[in-house]
Length: 255
Length: 244
Image 1: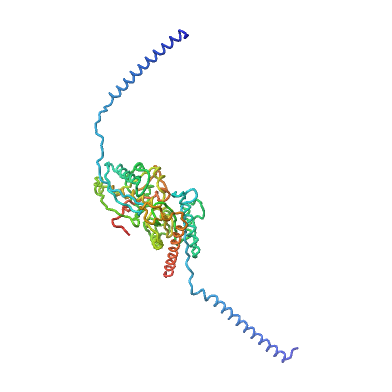
Image 2: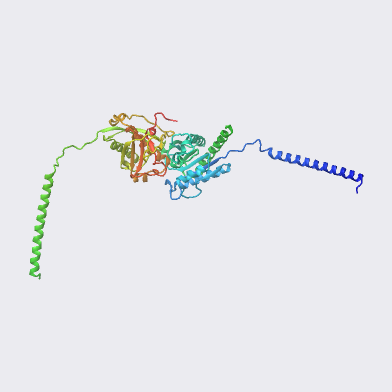
């Protein structure tokens, strides 16, 4: 039978142990709270960047060579080379790129538009090449602008995006002019672009003539010139970077 | 030595051949006389040569992506369809010339037919496969182009234009023209726009234009420009002073 003194000692020891446990629990809770606060602190002020995807459509391919160029090359090879260059430049700048073809393969016109529409792209560039004219030709869909609808007709899906496409063409025009290119702006009916539900522009690259096409002289830069392709791709990449900045600015200004 | 009976047989056959030839000649002469007597071959109407008139052609220029109005004098029939074909034929002759600013081989023979039909109002009429409401604003006042001097009021065919409704022109191009057309978005678009603008300038009732190739619908002209849509002709005419 324990004495009263032993009981008192036991209860005193028990109460001290309980106090120590409570202190330890409080300390652990404080540490966890501090850790959580420290983990959340850097995320809270910075808003996540909106998604920005660029679709590059190298026109033609496979059994569709496109235009036959004077040096024996075909349009499909020039557009693919330009697409690869531009994709590399954009990827290096952290822009997500979706291409409609990565090699010499036939891709249906509707499939190209499907790829662009599934990507919810911020910009779609349909790349072409031609021997006629000079410099770079930029074409926006000739469809009349229309209000966005819940269900858009496939062949006129671009109508709701024409205004944005014109803005994109303006940015591309500025960048190309700044890079010293001879630029022509126009509207055209192009099946692939007309079915795209995104800001879409057809970019047609022609040889460069230092003294004008009418001079009768040979072009100063041909379509198969790697340096010329790199200059065009660089100017387009600069324009798309500016387009991304504008898009983010618009996103930030949205309430 | 030829046997006697063979000689006689040869002579008989020879005489028979000669006689048959004479009879055939006489029969032919009789038939000819009967034919001539049955119809009056005297000319009753002198062949018509359409008087030369002035037509406005919108000629494309690849160098600066423009449509330039040119006044040309050419014989124009009174029938609107034939008139449209004649005007487009002249336009294509210019493109087929060696020093053309927008070289396209083929010439006047590239236009097989031009049909004129009553135009449907966009987005209101039923879909008949031609007026589908997929109208395209062919307003491609290309950046540095649009040099034009509108003087399209000289055609007698335009006098009745305000009395009738708008028309849809269906331009049937030849397959050889499409096959030989240079490939490129700009050059193909310029060709289509120059056709639309030229038709509207000379036949103001033509407000919409559609294209066929060898009588069939075709996706693109030479791989780029859409041929499945209806083009609004008036939008293709560059406005005066439309420089950017």
